[in-house]
Amino acid sequence: SHIQLCIHFSSKEESLGQGSFTRIFKGCKTDIRDGEKHVTEVLLKELDVVHKNCWESFFEAASLMSQISHKHLLLVYGVSVHGVKNIMVQEFVKYGALDLYLKRGRSVSVSWKLDVAKQLASALNFLEEKNIVHGNICAKNLLLAREGDPSQGSFPFIKLSDPGISVVMLVILDRIPWVAPEVLEAPDNMTLECDKWSFGATVWEIFNNGNAPLRGCDLEQKQQFYENFQQLPPSQWTELADLISQCMDYQAAFRPSCRSIIRQLNSLITSDKNRKMLCTFIHE
Ligand SMILES: Nc1cnc(-c2cc(N)nc3[nH]ccc23)cn1
Image (cartoon, rainbow, N blue to C red; front, side, top):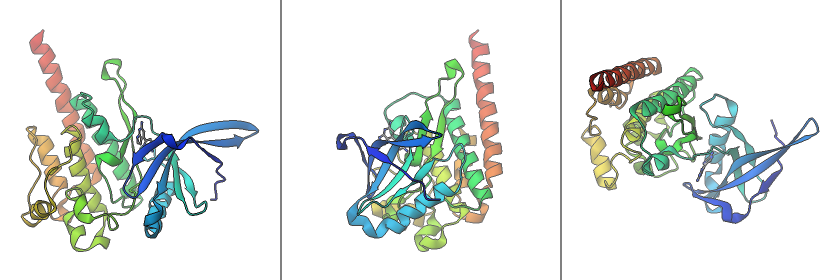
């Protein structure tokens, strides 16, 4: 549906940085609904003019997200093809990308991380039921809407962002180890199972303070990682390491279903609760 957007850019100084091929700005959109003015904070993703040829992929990402709505999927209000600029208008999510949030050294608990992983798994389950492939699951594409404060009993809340320019456009090697190995051979081989592989790499990021897996490796080493069927360094927590390695199985068909992933996350959450209870019991 053609959404009539009247977007008031904030000043350019408000540029929030760079995506890949995009510049992002904070802005606000004004809706007039039943005679009342509603101003909403939005994020504006402007496709670099030089990458004009990516615009189909840019809009594919936008239309993917605007077709469906789910509490853990980012809301895309629409796109503006005003003049030369291609702009996607999406909801502004307060705390931004999860990888940066974790890198800033916020100490978050194991249950916080498991809760985030479970929210991502439920978003993936929703996409799987709609047979929709996201194609770029990673901590950078998880946006934190609520920090959560377990001492107050409130939990974090994340939203999965649009996939951005498709991995086919991005230097695929740059997406190792998030992109599934089978995609390297045939980029249009992107299936639901590929998102499970990326889910594994993203959970690994979440439990490694937002640090990218294989960070510091050059492209040669990244290619070797796949050619030698390597796995990411396993967590000390064997049940977590098992879930991650199941998702990052080189045989796509062997990767667990979303239901199995959610079941395994639930048992990790339970054993974490029991561990904490035991600790408090012992300390008392
Ligand atoms: N859909 C989105 C995407 N990114 C944000 C965001 C939030 C923030 N606090 N700092 C930022 N710095 C760059 C982006 C950003 C918000 N909403």
